Length: 260
Ligand code: NAP
Image (cartoon, rainbow, N blue to C red; front, side):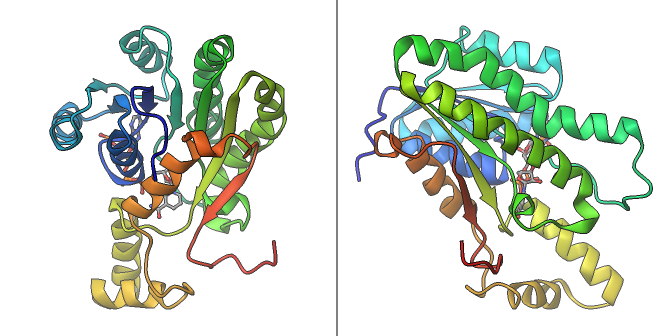
């Protein structure tokens, strides 16, 4: 399917690996020129070079912490202050117990997983509105629909972002700008490996056993992949997503057991 976005300019945050990289690859395949971001410069540059060589688009790496004001300024500078497509992403907050989190822990999580995305939308969406076309995908989590107790900082911050998008997406839709959220369940990235490592150590089982145990809880019987995830993200950034506004698209292999 032609996504109709060849020649558009996009920013994908936190994209040297994992789900962000999956999104960057799928957008590059559709012909989008990209700025991509992550903190480790070497890994990011290698990713940018590989994507540019594979798909023949321009990929500019900006090594910075996207959760800081300086990091966002560096990324926006590389874009010349405008983009047609924005994919918001950052690392998730650490797990813990609800009684232990301090105000500072909450502020950190809100900064990383809510206010960073809000700031980038505030910086880039007005230009999209002026030009009459734009797409934003915020990577959140299945935990927005099905809370995961030990990830309370994530549940809190991402639900806040979801509430912001619910209102704002309807305000910008008349100007051709489409804003939605994409909710990953378990995908085979470094994050899944670290979850499996935790189970493997805690239960004295092998990594393969830990993965098989988790996969058995997923109706598809497998983890998702960055490729699956990227393809859905690229569709949500395409011309065809014109009528999809303020939605929360769950990609979890059927784990969340609800009718809607
Ligand atoms: P990942 O494989 O660990 O990749 C994370 C990427 O983000 C890397 O490129 C990393 O590069 C970059 N990054 C992390 N923090 C950053 C920051 N502050 N500024 C800029 N770049 C940053 O993680 P993932 O599995 O793709 O997860 C992506 C997001 O989806 C996370 O918020 C995660 O909590 C959420 N999620 C993932 C899953 C899953 O199953 N994978 C499920 C639900 C939710 P550097 O380290 O070099 O910065």
